[in-house]
Structure formats: structure tokens, C-alpha cells
Image 1 (tube, rainbow, N blue to C red):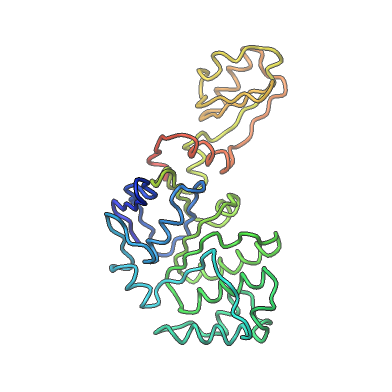
Image 2: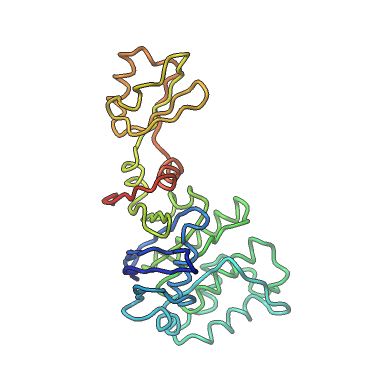
Length: 296
């Protein structure tokens, strides 16, 4: 799949602003961004639900509409209501019948963790079970690309873990997965590649570790204890500074050099050195207009 110079506007608002992005076969990629960053619009264009204002979106060498009709794409979107008075197996059998080369219903049930629920009515399932049914419906066409928009929203911890086990089983078949999520730890744990979208453009693209390193891979924190904060951002290895009360947090590209410089100043009270989390990187990226390149 590839976006090339893709723009989508709503009046004067550019929801997607010249997006260039390619997802390769077999990748599991996470799409991250703040509310309004352009994630849902990007997914809608990928599925052929919205046309781009300009630029192109290509899937498997053709248009998104052609790929969807051919059963090459499965989608699990945020909106959806259970169909009353049908069983899980009946629903999957019906959906599968609309595709040219569907997945066997028993395989979809097994992959989605629904092996014992095939005979249950869809409208009588718990929230977590209903979410797994939506996942099975997305698998019904035996797609090569699976698109998941906030797939674990409103699920409890156990249900989220069960869902990702199912998704990884699907990905291990050599399929491609693109998912958006607000749970950053899910992206870090389950994606080979993370794409951060901000203001309708790619703000960072690479593995979780590469993005954390590019933004500033380590956090060095210490108590100021009344010492001035002037000049801290100019210390060796420091890329940014944040003051929280009487505590200074330094984002560092070279934490060893930073700690040595702090020791020379006697600023080691309450010193801690921790790897930057994906949340730290995300907040840094989406809080600034700078576009990072070469994070991969």
C-alpha cells in the first residue's frame, strides 16, 4: 500500500496534508497520532471510503476500491452494532459468502479466539467477545491486508491481551496489518514499525526503539534543590529540558556525557537515568512542528 502526496481537505482544513507513506507486505505497522491528527481520515482513504482531494492511494497495484472488492483487504472500524438473532457462525458464513476466496469459517473462529462461541447469538455476547466477532468478520474474506481502527478501545486488560494474541497469529501467516491505537504500549509491543502522524503528515517512521533514540533515547532526572536551571539545556548530550516543580528532566542523546557534566556541577541529588518510553517520544513529536526523518 502506498500514499503519494495524498491530501484530504474539509473546507479550509487539511486533515491529511501531502502524506507520503508505504507499508510493505508482511509488516505489522501502528499508526499513532493525537485526536484530529489525520489517522481516521488516512484509514478511510485507504479503504476507499473517502477519495483524496489530491495525490494518490494505491493498494496491491490498483485502487482501494478494487482491492476491497477482490477481498484483499479486511477492516475492523470503530463503529458497529451487533446484528440481532443470528449466531456468530451464521454471521461469519454470510460475510464469507460475499468474497471470492474466503477464509474457512472454522479458521476465522479459531484465529479470533471464538472456537467455543460459534453457536452463540451475536447480540448476547460480552463487549470483549463482540469485539472478537468484529475481528473474525474482518478476517472472513481471507485478506492479505488487515486494517484495525482502535481495535481494543473500551476492552479490559484481559480482553486486550486476548485480542493481540489473535492478531499476532494472523500476522504470523505472512499477512500485513495496519492498526491505529491510543494505547502506546500496544504499539510498542505489537508493531514492527510505528508511524506517527501529526497535522496530517508523517512526523516519525521506524521501529519503536529507533523513534525513541531519534527523539532522545534517555531521560535523566534530578532534584534542583534550589539550584538554577539556566544552562542545563546546553549540557553535553541534552536535547530538551523540562522542569516539574523542583525536579529537572533532561532528554538526552548521550546520557553518559550528561551525567558526567551534572556530577561536575554537583547536581546529582535524586538522580535517575531511565530509557525514554514511546509515550515520551510521542509527546515530544506531537508537541512540536519538527518533522523527523531517518528514524528508521
